[in-house]
Length: 215
Image (cartoon, rainbow, N blue to C red):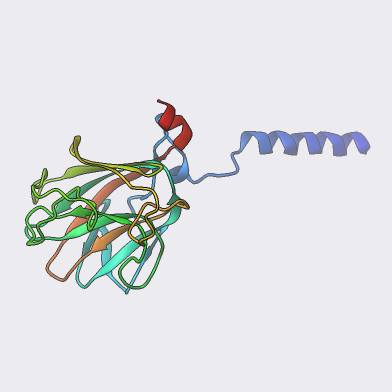
């Protein structure tokens, strides 16, 4: 009887070793270290504020209607972030990082502006309210890639591979609109009823700030 129990225990242990504890494919990094933040089907892993008019269509997040934001549940400090975006003409949007969920405008963190032809002079890739580009490197009604890299207090933004902003936050900044030591969530923005924005292929690569600085 003891031998039978022992064999059963060994068999169970072998199964535990073979079957992974986490079967969530969306949270597993690929060979380059990228983790998908959007499963292409629904808002699992995200939280919508202000009952916003967000939906998923054909693997794409579509935002519009009144002001609202979609916040990621997961938080990151040092990272590379990439997503493909598309704006309808005259639209205003953005991607926040180092933020926290709230029911109004994000209170903390920095916003990477998405605006190709809206009246706001601060165009796509700008760090809104901090440092700006006044010509857009993207076009409306076309998919473009937004790439954000944050290491310590160093922030870089890229649009279709072109660097837009290279910003080092000065020491001692205490304003809520800043790189935060504790990191935070990402948030996709629906700015106003006249703006329509789309996002797909949303992913992040966590970074080790010390290793990144040594390179």
